Amino acid sequence: MKNRKFMQTLSPETFAALEAISRSRGVSLQELLRAQVIPDWLRSYRNEKR
Image 1 (cartoon, rainbow, N blue to C red):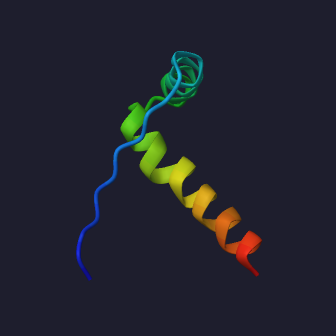
Image 2 (cartoon, helix red, strand yellow):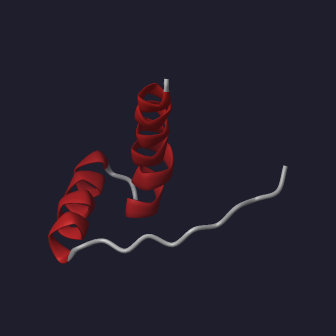
């Protein structure tokens, strides 16, 4: 399996909201995206495909 990379563009409002959530949890924004946001999105995407 190859590693895949992608780039995401966020509106300033969305970025600020995610940054505030990550700060409140004591993690970086990148960690929040990798550990919470992307896995949740993948689960919901898979459920929609069924």
